[in-house]
Image (cartoon, rainbow, N blue to C red; front, side, top):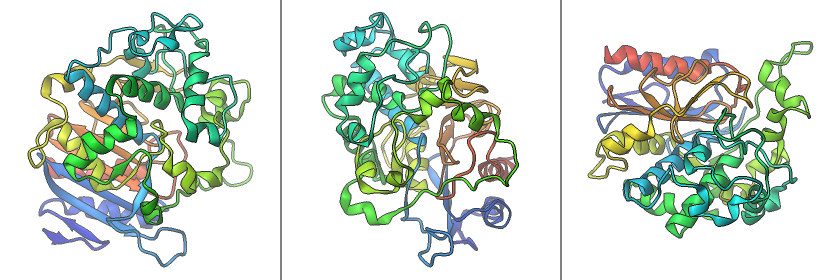
Length: 384
């Protein structure tokens, strides 16, 4: 291993990834970030750099914890597929087999699979939700029980921005007998000695770098199409993204970090994300999460095309994002999940790679993020 200039190390032959990582600070406004890559279960890239807050003196290190927004959804998908692998969860069974109260308002025949591939029509809830409801869990679940789908389930897909977490998480809780955060801690993170939590222990709160909102565009710049959709109070995008109504400052405070919000408040490191995905495609120190047959089923296309919420093409397997133009990962064959603002964890089985990237400075949701695009392209060039 050679020492990387920005902090950390890369294996011989992977120096271009180090160069791309450093370039993100010079060209793309990176503040603090970390990137990790495994190749056939062996760590070959382990980089970090920057600071935890703009102009601050606290360095962003390999041990800095970061909230990764919807990158959390991919880890939740791992948990569900582990239960399916153990014949405890059937994705094609009605949700009501596990969660009887879900069947109200014409939802009795919706299969579990549609919750995980954003086809259930439950991209939002009408009942207003607040931070206290999110922390308590049950009010969010009860709102979904009472919710009528926004479209005929199974006929289209639309990103379940927040609701994915309560839908998937409640199914996992009903099947396993523990919360999704407990399942991830006990069955995924602990065996792999990976620092990743859904529901952060308070003792670790001081290690978390705050998330920094995207830098506003210059005055007079038209909003991007996605931002415009969210700003329209009558749009499904607004309903999906803006409820629960949580003050932005609360995202960087412990009550939210300590809650279980499986759609978006996972907290961990780049090392952890890469290690978890490495264990989905092979053994890591004797631990494998998903067998090959399970992985094959998990990554079959379930929904692809224009997304009723996002307004652009998205592509999903059962819980995992698959490659599409705005979220390309390492191209076709990749599976994982991006998070709002730029974080990502993914793997590519054929290439034998897994990839984790976390950062504090968010960028707009719309379009490809040049930071991860550059890192992944550099990685692919190293493999040729």
